[in-house]
Image 1: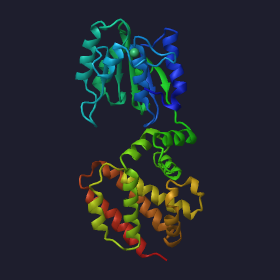
Image 2: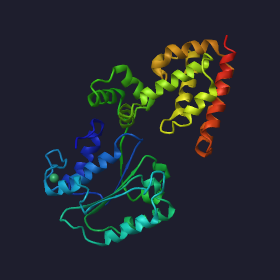
Image 3: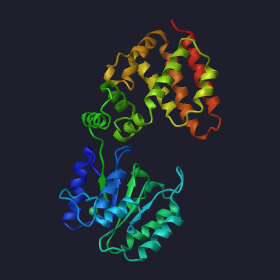
Image 4: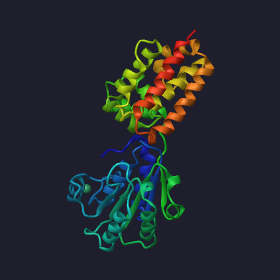
Length: 330
Ligand SMILES: [Zn+2]
């Protein structure tokens, strides 16, 4: 496993714990989404469990223990996550962990538990988990991961050593993205950086899932509507099926960029610099007040999106408004 380039400092800190033989009983890794917190935690766990780590402190990847880790059959490595995406971590899962911790580790090194996302432990689960923190077990280290530290109880936070994974700078993200994908155009890397607000792993995910193509298709349909070339109800029917992409977020950024173009913001500060040539004319043709009103509608729709079952009528309302707004173009 290779270290992510922006995590070198974090890694020095973690391997320092091992070198100085003061591995914390509980560690809380926090930071924004898409920075590789789980990967860092796994590297630390593997390094603690490996028989003969490399000189940089990373696991060797060759020994028997490393083989067990790769096969996900190492008995002293426990991972806890929600049983299904979107669900909480339950008290049943934590109780089961507590029973496991009453047993000694099976090998002579550490036992590592990773809980991710820790903020998804419900109240009962967090209360039960506090017991693990208050009554340490031998050679065991508990690693909590969260992208939302403010949602963890203060009683848990105060009992952990904290490690913050911070956002890398733009150059680092762009370099890393082009290493991962040598055929990636610089302008695309830039777009991805903006779209994901500097989150490298999410940007990579976008490349692999061809989300950029989908974004382009949606943007083109949105522009067709502005030229009255398509019907909003037809587009809404297509869009309600696209649950895997942040479509409402995209429309919101396109709208904000029109407003930014109106105020002649420099292209580098747009969310979508690659669409500047299409958005710029709209900022001249549309009435500013009407764009702000449309933006308000988007904010309300974003709140409703989570609870409203009928996504089609939600998109219809947005797209009909967008269509009408463009009818009054000057
Ligand atoms: Zn090893």
